Length: 568
DNA sequence: GCCAACGATTTA
DNA sequence: TAAATCGTTGGC
Image 1 (cartoon, chains in turn cyan, green, purple):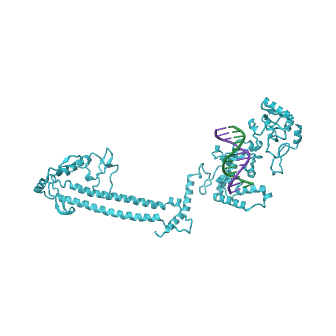
Image 2 (image 1 turned 90 degrees about the vertical axis):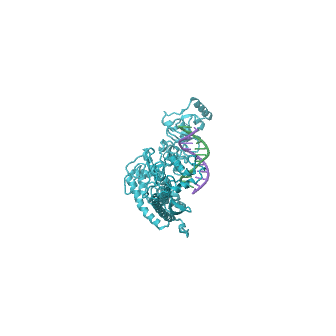
């Protein structure tokens, strides 16, 4: 074992090799930086040794639980190499004696974890530095955010940046040294000299700054112009400082343009540079309300609803006038179509109103005719003779009850039959009819059981209005016509009770007029609805919301605007 | 040379 | 067997 030690004298303590860069670590008794071979670490001084330098194979190391280098064992005789079991120890002893070695040794770094050591070691972990000793992920860095346990996609698959070994992890995986030193400087300015991993929160904060400064494009906020400790420019500068001696002249245009692109990117994203700084400098974010210096509430950008409303109002004042101007300057096809529709609707409304007036006139005219007809005297003889001359053997069937009836009384029978069945059903709505200026249109009798208003025409409602009892001397009075439509000026003067030709003629005429009035009212209602829709559409088109949310951009000024088409 | 992505390997 | 993480690769 002395032979081992003889070479180890210049050893412990990390040294830098000039061969592989200034920071390359030297190991083992041979003081070489090579780590691409089997190595074993001392559980006391944590120095690493090449297996071939101290004659320990990987196989032998598997049986060792704790291993100490010769130097440590010399200094502290209490340190003793411990093995997993007697058998394996014997085996190792045998192996070693076969090869002429006197002392067993060597835990593989891979075995380190298996044998329960608290300090992990590997090619990428020295097991000594702060990051190696760290057991918890920061949950803030990009590597953590990538992890499934933090809800990430598991694409990067790298260890937390704050757990990347200071010595052996690849530099690109660590938190940048420059940033750490900058952070220290920052802490010094606050008279709070603490070691970089003294507390977990400060690391999280550090990383937030690190990200906010642009290392993570997705969350970049800070402006390039801000002199933040980790702004993208500073970061680039920091990286360059390391190589500046060697490559100052090599600085090519490509990198310059790349840097420029990044700068532009950040400028676009960080109009509120100061706010970004505030945001990145701590867990609290500043309220975005105008002139507000309070901290924003959790899960909100504002300290209060008031601030949010103020900002929204400011936006409206800023954007709306411009949009209104734009709107007024550009023609709008939909607007013109809307105007045309409105014109058409107005025309139709006018026509409907004219028709309604006409029907009202006819309504009163009819009432006048009926009143005049009632004044006629009954002519007894003619009526009897006319009735007797008809064929009494003919029979027709009632459309309601299917009974065979004499044609003379068929109209009367069917009318009564229909009234009987019709009055057994109701035809109502929850609301009474409210038509201004309309007289005697709907029945509108309230039914307390069904809580509805009857919607039959009043003149045709057998349910709520019974035909009045006809006096014996009442004349039929139906106006007589020739060629179907031409009024003769005469009236049927047969007794009303006996006239089968004009049974209930007043009722039918009234119903005819009322039905037409109802149709016109429906038409007017439909036109009102159409007008309302068109007006709503036109109002919304140039409304606050539409103007704020939509904007037509003419990307190509050369192309003719479709709206200026000749057809218009 | 940096970095994202991903296969491969180790570990719990 | 899933999670952790290391090494390699290809694009930029």
